[in-house]
Length: 325
Image 1 (cartoon, rainbow, N blue to C red):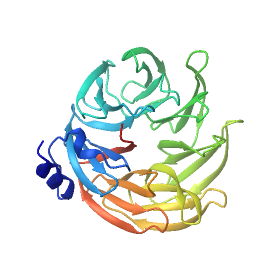
Image 2: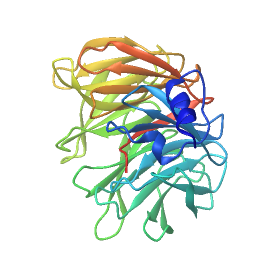
Image 3: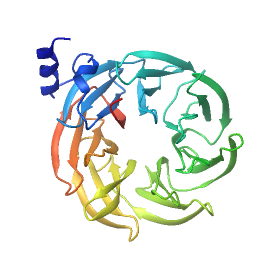
Image 4: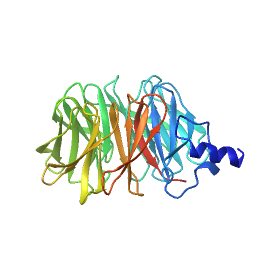
């Protein structure tokens, strides 16, 4: 790709750009990838410049995107196809796929990258993948319509939200993945994240306007945090005087930064229509997908200031920070 064209793409945030080459994303701050479910694409955002620098075509209805721990690949779930897609992080080209036999929603890697776990909401299953071999190993029944899925930081357990059951399933992962327990949390549990030490899990309850706190040692609910309306994705972010829990609230079109210790709201930050995904970056910025507006809001983590609003593909859903390879 000619250098002038690369520069033009990097400077434009008015809409999805053409596919990019390695030379177009070599800035040190890495990239944000958004799964644009209505556009059958992944948008690529350069963190250093807050610019949409390209679009990667995908299969039908990409729902979430996650990079591998070694930075070499990123994987995409497809809601309207029965496979996962694998892309090279350097070239942005598709390099493989894994047949699941059903549609997929969310996905998470084990910390060592040797296993990938995928929620299959239509089948009430969790798929276990060997990403190195690009092979489906097994499927494990969980609750009804599983969605959010995350490996505990120590790699020993997997947490899965079951949206139709209002339950959380916990799977032990060694020696082999196995369902250990399921129990009720809030209404329509959607996503899950962990405090940095892994001692507490946080579950967004989409129809409960709340976040449930789970002690990972006892597997007991220890508290509830009030959120905005229809909380979706959530993440821990350093800034605003501490490491706070940031919650993307779809119904109120804003992000709440909450102190997880006191459970008090610290700051409300306006985003866009259908505020859905939230992810921090090492550069001190937070990126938020706005599904109804087809945009991404960029926020300065230190003070909550909105830095930019970027146009991406239609219905951006899940998003991830992917370091440059």
